[in-house]
Image (cartoon, rainbow, N blue to C red; front, side, top):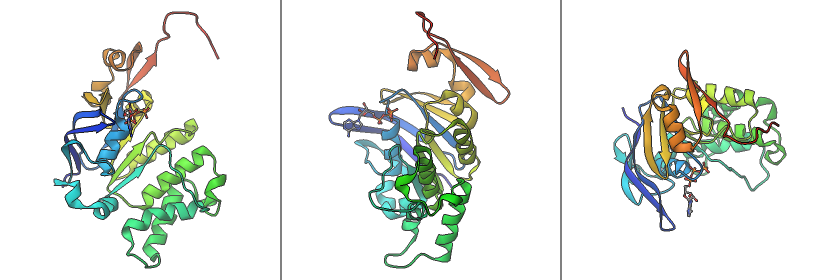
Length: 260
Ligand SMILES: Nc1ncnc2c1ncn2[C@@H]1O[C@H](COP(=O)(O)OP(=O)(O)OP(=O)(O)O)[C@@H](O)[C@H]1O
């Protein structure tokens, strides 16, 4: 069994090449970190992987079949996404939002089954939201909203999980908890991240984008070298080896040394 794969995908948006010939093959069960500066094409690549955007050239496959052939509903049963800025317009409780994850599994006009309810309850528990189930979405903090969207994706019981900067808005404990949870799930995960140290700690493999192109791919230790960090982010860094993963320390640019 394979998983998602992009084969030399290109995507143009408003006459600009935003993703430029990226090939990425996911191995079932692995956690792949998508790195790169703002505007480097991470979100766009995630949308291509989810089938929400069609490539301008190249192909995205799921188990070897192009996504248009797999179909939207079948893709939605397999692939869950958590976008950067998820909104809900209507008055929904946390449990209602999480239950939206069951839609791809339900037949039209049929009430939720016991299996649907169980998946929702389990997803709430896994994300620490059981006590918030009855709370209105609108009253949640940014971090609680983020966790609710993760719970919705887990309720979908996906085999592939695509996360766009899911640690935004989370305090450090919830960042670590979330990434530990994601890394422990028996699903194939692609996760766009800005924090290189968190990527080093929780990802099996990294793909680094710059101006839409893949410029490095490999394990965190292979990829996160000072020269690469300087080339991609324009930042000086020291990298030391902690058992199991590299640790990055950013060096101040020359100039007045300010402190918070
Ligand atoms: N609908 C659109 N029309 C025109 N340009 C777009 C559109 N969507 C994205 N872009 C551009 O494509 C480029 C890549 O955007 P994308 O959101 O994929 O980057 P990103 O790496 O996820 O960035 P960030 O880290 O800031 O979230 C950016 O320059 C962005 O302005």
